[in-house]
Length: 369
Image 1 (spheres, helix red, strand yellow):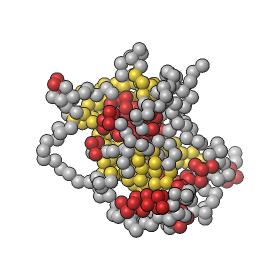
Image 2 (cartoon, rainbow, N blue to C red):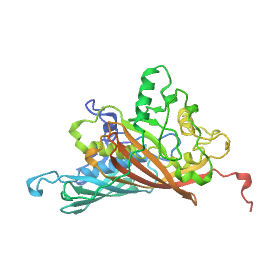
Image 3 (cartoon, rainbow, N blue to C red):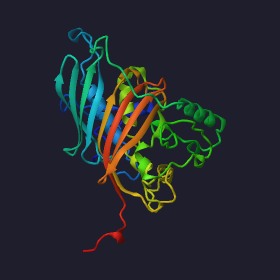
Image 4 (cartoon, rainbow, N blue to C red):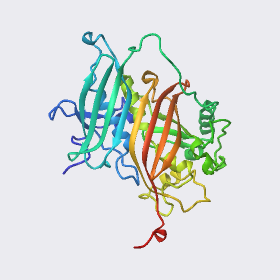
């Protein structure tokens, strides 16, 4: 009987972090070169239509990275690292059957290398991405440099949250904004109508100021969170392991930004998702009770783009700050921008996602034929 992997999953490698074990892929050289499959069963989030999209994004990146020629005398000891990937979600992935990743070597140039990867299940493409890798140092000594600054005083929010957690070890971590389940940790910050400033943590999340819900400032709202992989990522994986981990984390509640800035429930309170009460409560934590009926009927990612600005400076096992905003939503779709900084304040990555966001419709209000 078919299972979630093509081969029997090995036990987790204790020398690697949780996220490295989750994202491990196995080469299928008996089929063809540059073909890989998931080593372990992929996570299907409660209430989602398919597997967690971040896992497919990250494993496609891992597969493409394995096709990049290593430094050698023949290529001048060149090191190529990912700088952009453009993805499309085609079909929902089924967590009960394996995913096979097919890498196509489009071009190997002196400064850039291009790859495409298709993720397939039962012969059908469920996800496709085009990736570009840049040769380190190919820009020369003189370059044009600028970058979006990290929000002012936001580092204090991390220190406050960690101190609060240490001081109140008997307090529910979720009440302090911590979400520790899964292969990475998250500290959610309150929604702000501009850049983050003067944020104070409390053991009661309800003490956070409720964001304004006037439609004129929806596009100015910023949603921030601190995120890091649990454990330490093994040095043997090089920067590639950190880059795959960030790709995995980048999809966490990304499209959900559209619902959060509108104070709309992602999950209807009357329809808990497969008994996962904690997930429902967490996703609806920013909902304004003045609009209790509004809820999202369907939310599906359509495309996802990541620009890796400073791949060498991305350390996924150290705290990273992400800031999301939605400049537009309409016609049943929503657009979200994400910026990611390291603790040193360097903008290391930017992401863009568009997805299907349709509200649950009132059946009584629909026109009858």
